[in-house]
Amino acid sequence: MPLRYLIFDASDDGAGTGTWEAMASVRAPDLPAVRTEVQRVIDWAEAHAPGPRAPLDEGGAWDADVHTAQDGDWIALTFTLTGPWEWGEAMRAALTPEDAI
Image (cartoon, rainbow, N blue to C red; front, side, top):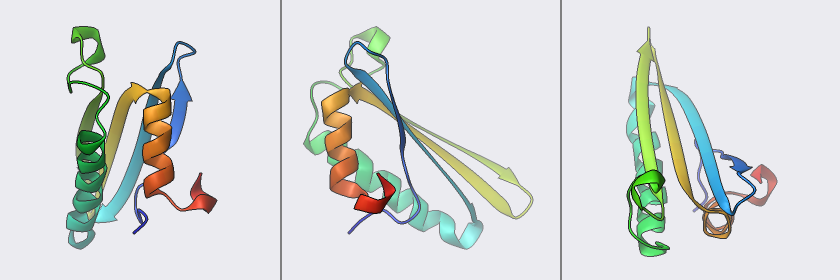
């Protein structure tokens, strides 16, 4: 099943490492669905891991970071994934609908 809330923007550092960022802004009742999508991405990343998860500058092959912030009734969740370019693009292809890529 494709992701519904998270649509990733990708950037390549030119040296083979990519960063994929997604943000969802939802009301509290929808937050569990967004967190479920984040977990699906992390599960995919772990199942297809190109190496250990840790910050890249500490020797990791990939990493993920999630932040949430609330503004009134809205909760913004920002999700960032870093790792080898081909690996991240495979994740995006596996989890996002074709029209979102």
